[in-house]
Image 1 (cartoon, rainbow, N blue to C red):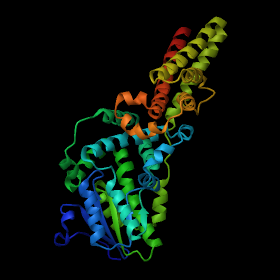
Image 2 (image 1 turned 180 degrees about the horizontal axis):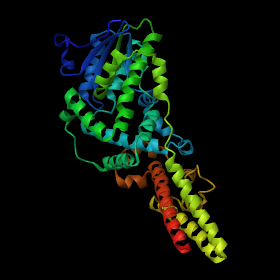
Image 3 (image 1 turned 180 degrees about the vertical axis):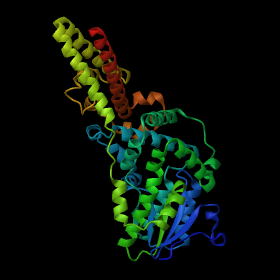
Image 4 (image 1 turned 90 degrees about the vertical axis):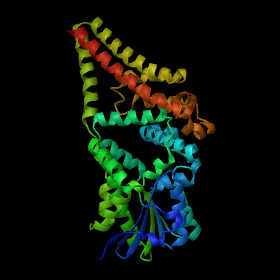
Length: 411
């Protein structure tokens, strides 16, 4: 096997490809033409179209998983989102993060008049037009987010959340030439190097692991398509160097590598143990209070109910939930020992969805509404996520306040 990595000769580069980061990697008899793109860039779209016109490919691969490819080809998919299933399956956080990131991309798109991921869509359209197989080689976005999230410590998670929330209110325009600079190898590598120092786990989950995954997927797809001898690969510029390196150097079985990178690392147990331990300690204290006197025990139990219930309900009120959603949150919050696996916010959010079913206009406008603080309360879909979050925060604060008061009353 003779694996090589070479830059596209400048003499063969058409005008639309001037300055575009393109690498060619030959592996196992397959030539991969790898185009690095910026996800909101007219130049990247033009580069994809130029390559498809100038060269003949046996397949086209894109930096998308199956679910993202479907949603890109079907932009109305969000309108069919089943909020009941999202909440019941514990995907509320993932969907909320996707909405925030989508809002940020949409802001860039409105600035420059081009939709996010337009270069990926152009590649898919080229494959469809020319009858070429389309390979979706990225790891499932939900799995990627979960692996990255579980790799972070508490402080890092808090920092990520604050960055996401902060991006919602950022209104400073970004110059188009700055977006084009994202394709510069040196600048990109330097940025990622600094990022890795502050959050190596996040870098591995979002960048490094996906480089290895996409290389393995390309090898696997090529092995299953013996007639594929030349493949166009369209990826974000941040993955260009890593993908080329893995594609040239990986020697293990691609299926084994993919299975390893799709395995979900175990979640940290200490937060669950801490929460369970806190509730257990409080109820032991309540039991001891009853042992000392019925009045003292009744006061301790009432403190628990009122602190958790009222603060959980306050979260629902701040989110402007339906009165019955507020009542449900008040009832659910003190029952944590009975519903350890079900957050009070989930119960309140399910009630809100049942009472105020989102309309088509809510789904259509949620990416816009989430970028403006008033839209969080105006849009019924976004308000469900807000209610879920605020009820849970209020409940946790209530637990700590109740615990401190109960233990202090026994001393």
